[in-house]
Image (cartoon, rainbow, N blue to C red; front, side, top):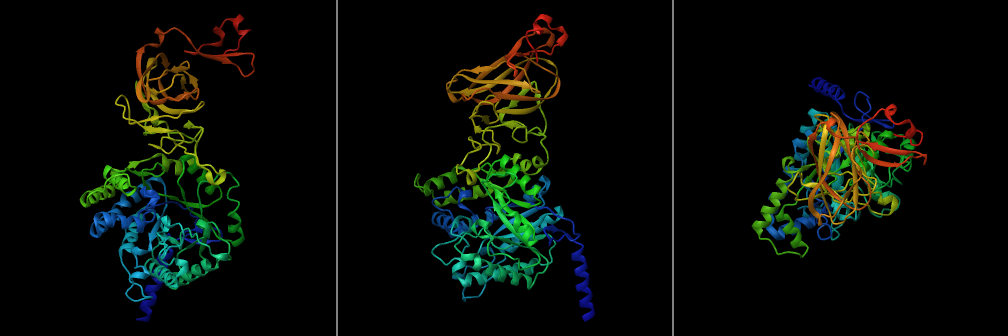
Length: 619
């Protein structure tokens, strides 16, 4: 019998070693074949723990327990539990994991709330004992089952610890009326016991990418002595049952203060840091890189996001240039533009928000329940707004400057081109905008990169509209001189076209022009007031010559007088031979001695009058 048990044990060890389980090797994270793995991940923030800013409840119900208390008051305990169950069921599904795989991500960082695994210490029947529940484990089991076919690693992140690990209750559900993690040995013992139980359950799962022990501690812990003590206690608990998986250690001060946390106390450990709202210049990781070299351990950027696509691409480029894996935040949020899936606020939920803020009447219990269940239904992929530009910025745009059509195929001319559907790509390649990110931790000033806060997460400012002519429901606004948007178009025939631009403005004097492949095809156009920012009207440009084939169309903004642009419709009006050659624009050359003239057709230089060539240089 002993030999049989030994054989089974050895066989399992061999099978596990043939899997893809991660471990550290010097400053690298590698798989079981010792091949380096650069983690590219996303976190389903708001799934197991609600955060007020993502629920639009900051200021009056920032933490989950406050949100829950308000819902109980409004619709009762039973309805509230039904809603939370549906919320967790819909918030992160197999379809989401399939999407992450299709987009190019290889890992998921799951933010866990301890109360889905065990009771708070205040509710334990016997002090010091732990009552276990299966809810949290079942959620993890589902994700592991969905992730394994895609070779996606799952990193478990204790986002809300027993008692709470930070004074900012919104992100860890801390209740100031109860002892925090740092003020209660009972809470710390429960956390150690919980991690030990988690590790025992998943010790042999090759797709567990590791254990992120405590998310974003932010507490006054002199020398981080107590933080290290708790980390070491958790590590001892985990290693008593699991010697396979990586342990991720975040510093204090929202993960970035690692003082007192060196040297490493485990040989399969990674130091994790977070990064938000700061610049992404080549030297901007110099504060953390020495930790890797001095301690001979890998680094992992465990959480970032909440910014523009330009910031995303630049940040990921910075991490990957320094051989650091990363995880983004968050897969979906309510009423925001910087997550792949945006959840619309239904009218009923808006009524609840208004009531909680003292700006509306109290909904009935039935009305409140129906509204919250509708909000939970809106979490599903098919009911969310997908922002394809975000995964594109995080994965493809990091590797290339190439732009691609927003809707997958080039817009066809003759036809309508929607101004909000400029190409997917980086600033200066797919578009140029003067404000493209928020760097407030570096500059001290917050900047809204998309003043319209709609449709896309790029620097181009996009607003919603209700125009019913050639509109997709959105328009470009808040334009500044020098800005432009690029559109890949497929022109079916070389011909003379009329362009009908759908514009709205309260002012007169806004200027723009169009180009194809960097060559101007219109003179500078001047827009008169249409009577208001949402009163769209037709602005027609005649006699535009367009070449056949696939080309790059650009809308150029020529001054800073604001105009809203919804769409351009191109219609064929004549053959090219029917139009006389005309001058479109002219300007003094860079040498201040020549004149650069743009004309409506290409011409041979030899055909120009020699006397004129002696005076002017034609480009």
